[in-house]
Image (cartoon, rainbow, N blue to C red; front, side, top):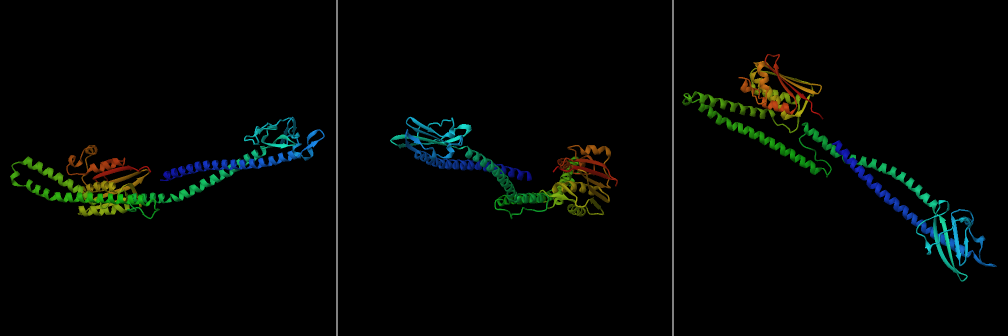
Length: 443
């Protein structure tokens, strides 16, 4: 779940970063463009004013029309000052001293040139042409101003704005991750409740969640209830079927013992044997259902909680002077499905109780990454040369060994499902010892 949350956070963070960068770049470029256009319009008006001052500086003199340098701004006298002009009057021309040997381009039309022009010393010039008529003559005045300081200011603004934007972006991402983590906290609560559900600590998920999660939780609760109902119906159907077959079996047993079959000894023996097997199988399945009880789907097997009830049930089933002891560490829990563990231990203990004389002992312990289950009884046991044969797949010990039934089919399937090992030994109590080693599942 946490990986899922991290993935969602990463996706949201990447999406937020991409959107903010895109929006930030668009807004920054639009802002700079608008500021640049506004500044150019302002300078356009300023250069028009400069042109009018230059027109006013033209006067008639002894040699014709002259430019009165006293009325020309001092900026036009400093070399490469960034302020330049050129006046065209028929065959006369005046250039600002600041342009030195640089000749301003001659725009063909009045107004502000759209593009900046390369000037002296790599200056970027903003050029305006204005046409006038004075003294009966046409006068064209070209005025230019260095735009490089503004471009440099734009670059500084971009750098500063980029740094501020990067810091703001980082802050927004951190805030976004914090708020997303808080928003996804209900999902973590659902995960914890599902873990509690798996461990048997609750039967349903809490519906007091944000509105967006309520349909999911309600559907899960509905599925849990449906599964529990199906398990209950299946268990009840199994019990009903077993009880329904008991009466026909009793009738068949009665028929098999009738005197008419005495003359057919082989037929009578085969019939009795088959009926006996059917009765044992029905009794075993009913015992499994009774031992399992009301198992919560997915619950783990807690030894201190489950074993007392299991031992008590077996004592009631088998009765007589039989002592069933068990030993397990406090709070020891087998990390497998409760139903599987009840079937595993229920079958083995049930068999041990059947053939024990006085005592049955169950020991459960954890060693490193293994859980070891040991069942000892003081019954007749199994001969060493038969133990390997009993454990072969497909072999049934109640058929191979007269008078000793283990129900190893269910036990073997559960042990293999848990990737464990099943071994038979001679018990210190004198009977059979069943040792099961189950590796702890990987988390």
